Length: 202
Image 1: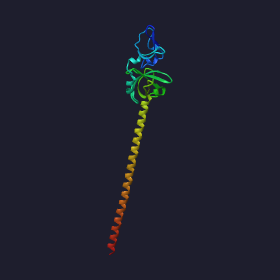
Image 2: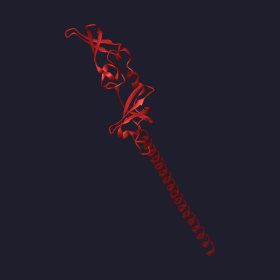
Image 3: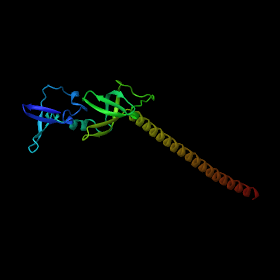
Image 4: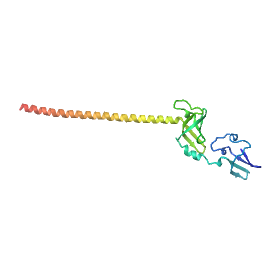
């Protein structure tokens, strides 16, 4: 959109240079004709007599902060926007930023799909500072918990199986010892009896 700096001097502000956070499709979503807007000169093209202007550059880039906040696998509480067959925008009101949740990542633990205006926890599954894109998932939270529970259960079973195997081995070892002990006792008894018989014969 064009901005008149003073009479006869116009500058062009690209739609992407209006806001760091809002995805603006048309300048009317951000401002109105006749409204004053603070801008900064980004580039001067003397040859073509053009000025490139920016508005968002007057503030620090919040995506520098978001990079630390929305790290991979971090959890955040967000409000579900309009749900389509592709997915839904998820608004993190605390930070004033929107993320995107693909449709399959909106499935809740009970099998239903998250609804508009619903507040849920979301896990960050993609962060792209350059494209100002955050992708989140609600489904991944309980899916991973279920997988962890399965692993823990599997580990317990293996542990139990190991304990059972040890117990069985111990019983077998004891039986073998008992058998050997019995053989030794019988041998001793036999020797003793044989000794007695010889005495009787004499």
